[in-house]
Length: 150
Image (cartoon, rainbow, N blue to C red; front, top):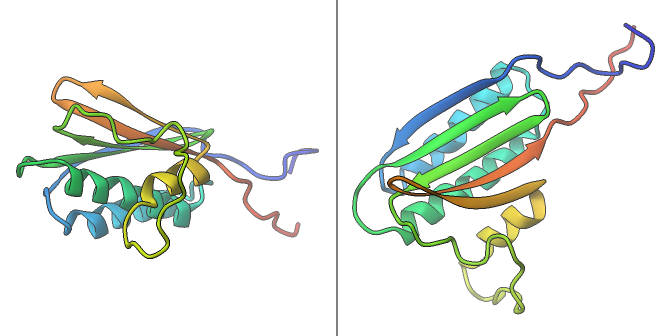
């Protein structure tokens, strides 16, 4: 090992793009894809957080967009971390994703925390228009791998 190098990050970029059904069945499929991508490439991003935030994005796309057009999941692994995008056919922005709301979610309600989780746990998040609707995304930084004894 070289001097101060405590860990190695992935050197190459990789990406996946998959169409998912416009149904709740898309959520576990999306989680599995993210988990597999991060694990198989031994990527340094936090897999549990990536899975949770991916599930929130996919569930929001399914719940808040009309029709049965598929949604699309895009996972990009970069040396600096990962970015996950969910594309859906609705051009409307996703609520208050990039700015905090004044009121806390109602503790008695089952919904209303997804965007809060995405804002709180990602290094950055946002949305952008696409030709067919919008893409909502988050980024997670790569984290150091535990140092192995020499």
